[in-house]
Image (cartoon, rainbow, N blue to C red; front, side, top):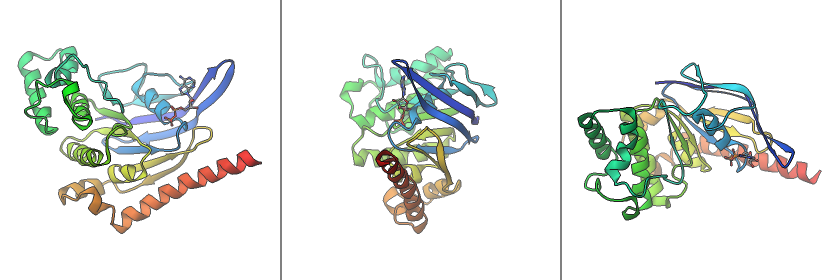
Length: 269
Ligand code: ADP
């Protein structure tokens, strides 16, 4: 496994000669095996932060370290799951999951075993030969997660992976992801708009500010709670009524609301 360290990160975008600071002075450490959710208003720099960890973009200042090594581009130690499932439409479920493994140079037998393992874990048995268009959105996202997991990356970077799913499917996928993380822990950075999703899934919830792309709060929601939840087979609807859950949820909501208040106040000034 591996940790992710953002050190004094700044990212300035220049468009039509005008510079915008998407991120400023970000210091964040996602520890080995930790699940960190990033929440914040649209445009606060969440995706930019994740793209830096993925090596899909480079910071203007500071550096990102994964497992102590500077990030200089994408690598097999990091898998990315986007909201749009990004499956190959011309490949079957099994071929999609096997794709990265082929690139990794696994032998056929090893690859088939790995694909079968993750097909089973994500409940995709019987759908191995289906094409993405024959699957529901939820099923497609299962394939995307299975494909990322099959690569056995040390770090999983997820950008609103359940954002396009209906509420019911989303709940099932959240439970499935927790189960997968309990069986096979990974260092996870998970971007979401949904406060409840963040508190339910994460060990820590990082709240970003609307202005200037900085971190306004880093809340430890209990690193062992997540595994306990699963071991007790608690569903999100049960967990949501727990006093500790209600407390964390309202703390995060309040932080987000306060920022809206400050933004409106500064726009009116
Ligand atoms: P979020 O994921 O929180 O919605 P983003 O990271 O996508 O936010 O964007 C943060 C800010 O950076 C926004 O103001 C956005 O317009 C700007 N931005 C992001 N990518 C680019 C780009 N490639 N060129 C110019 N501006 C960008």
